[in-house]
Image (cartoon, rainbow over all chains, first blue to last red; front, top):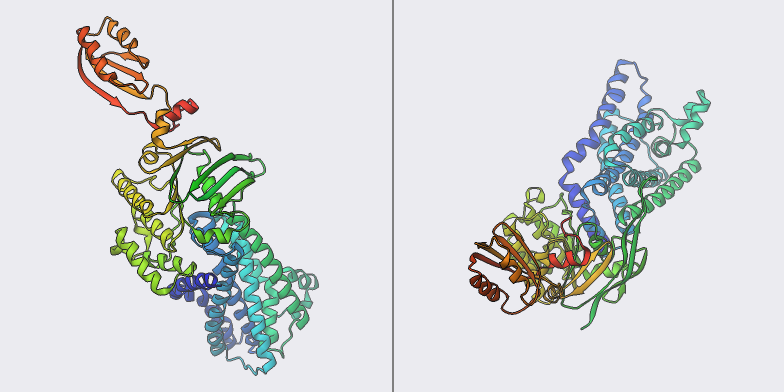
Length: 254
Length: 320
C-alpha cells in the first residue's frame, strides 16, 4: 500500500508540474465549443435557447472521458514503445497489476480535475438552470467516477496495444467517430428519428457517459433509462479494466 | 558462504512477436551460483543471453523452465519479495524524464517505503559520492552518458539492496568515465554488496570480478576466477619480438625448439611466439637471438587474456 501511494504521489507530482498545459488541453476545446454553441449561436437565434440544456452534460462528459483516456494512454504508449521509463516503477516492490491500477486511478483524478474546471465555466457561459436534488448529485458523482474509470481503463487498452507511430492515427480514426456518435451534442432519445443509428451507437461507451450526465444534471430532458446507463458503464469498465490489466502485464513482462 | 543467487538449468525461449517471426532460444540451460559478497561477472558476446539472465533474476522476464532464486526466493513465484532485495541498473537509460535527479532518488526510495528523513539523507550522500550534487535539481535529459549511468546506480542503491545487478554498466562510456565507474563499483563491493554484472569487455571482467562465467548461445562455457581462467589457456602467453638479420629462418626454427613454445608466426621483422606459461621464456629467446647474431630491437610480453580464452573455447573472437 505504501508503494501504491508513492506511485500515485509521483504521478500527481508530474500532473501538478504540467498543470498549465494539462488545463489548456482539457479546457480549451470544450470552452470554445460552449462559447459558440452555447453562447453565440443561441443569441443569433440559429440555435434554440433550450439547446444548452442538452449540450452542458455532453460537454462535461466529453471533457472528463477524453482527459482520463489521454492521461493513461499517451504516457503508456511512450513508456512501453520507446522510453522504457516505466521500468523503474515496475521494479518497485508491488505487483504489476498494482502499477497498472495506479495508472488508472491517476487517470480518474485527472478527469475529476478536468470536470471541476469545465463544469463551472460551461455552466456560467450557458446559464443552464440546474435544480439538482440529492439523488441527482449522487447520480452525478457515480456517473462521473464510473465514466472516468471506464475511459482510463480504455486508455490503458489503447496505450498497451498501439505502437507509438500509430497513436495519432488511432486518435483520429477512433476518437472522431466516438465523439460525433457519442450523443454529446444531441440526446440519445432524439435519435428515434433514425432507428438504425439509434441502436448502432450503443456500441460506443461514450454514449453511456454522456447520457449518464444528462440523467444526473438535466433529468427533465429526455435521457437513457438509468438501468441501461449504469449497467453499461459498469460492464464496459469491468471489460476494459480486465483487458487493460492483461495487456499491461503482457507488455511489462517478456 | 551463503548462496544468494541460484540459477539452475534456466531456459528461455522468446515467442515470435509477429506471425512470421522465429522463436528465439535466448537461454539454453544456464546454471551458476553466487555467494554473498561476491563480485560475479557474466561475460559473453552480444546475444549470448546475459541480459535475459539478468531480466529473469530481476523479475522482468518470465523463465520458460528452470530455477532462478534470489536469497532463496523463487523469482517467478514471488517477484515482489525479490524486488525488495535487489537493486537494478539496466542497460537502457530508463530514468524518469519528468523528474529531477534528486526527485528520482527520493521517489524511488519512497516506493520502497524508506522513511522521509532517511531518504533525504541517503539521496544527499549518494549524490555527493557519485559527484552529482551540482545537477541534483535538474531533469536528466541533458545528462551525459556517464552521469545518467551514475544516477541509475544511485537510484538502485537508494533502498539499500542486498544484491546489485548491473547490465553492461560501462557500454558507451569514454575510457575515463569507465575507470571512474570501476572504482565506484569496486568500492561498493568492498563494503560488502553482492554484485552481478554483465559485460562484453574482457578487461572489465578482469578488473572487477572475483569470478566470471563465460556464456555463449545461452549456456555457461566455464566459470572461474579471471586469473585461473587465463591460466587454463594453452599457449596463452605471447612474446612479440621486433628483429633484424633473421632472414634465413634459422632463428625461428631455434625458437620452436624452446620448452613451452606452442606456435611461431614470423612476418617481415616481427616474430610472434605463442607459448605456455614457462619461466625464462623471454630470456631464452634473447639468448638464442645472440647466438644467431640476430638483433632484437624491441620485445613485448602479453599476459594471457580472457580474449584468448574465449577464442580457445569457442573458436571465435569475442567481438564478432
